[in-house]
Length: 200
Image 1: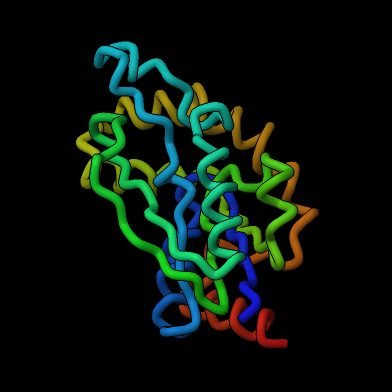
Image 2: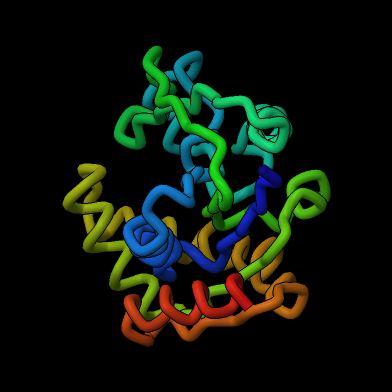
């Protein structure tokens, strides 16, 4: 079986993970999903204040070397032990999650296009294009409910690092993808569009 890597990128809170999850449901048995978010570098060596100052929207914050190693293993038909990351503490868990090679491997991440070694592995590249204000609203809701953040801290981070890094490391790659999806569309319809695209 030849593994096909499907890269789904776009800005923070653009809807990537929602579409990836729907693809996983619709292509059950044919697909595995890897979130690049799992591969944030462990910041356990820093104190809480220092961790809060790390730019988590810059490529340097991600352990891309490990992801590339894992993509190589999956392409060879081997399973991987993907890391589990705790966003509240910015540390990597000692536990891992086994991911099996399938016909399609979705690689979901804001910064996947920023690394040539990752891009070279992608069979298909999809960009979810969502307005900045919509992404901010979604991010506030998610980070407050799932990551213990305050609205003020989310807004501050969005303006200070999320938007500038998006303009520098994410948006420029939009035109280098094979399919652009409107992030305001119904996610189910977007997933159906992706399936139609890859099956064709």
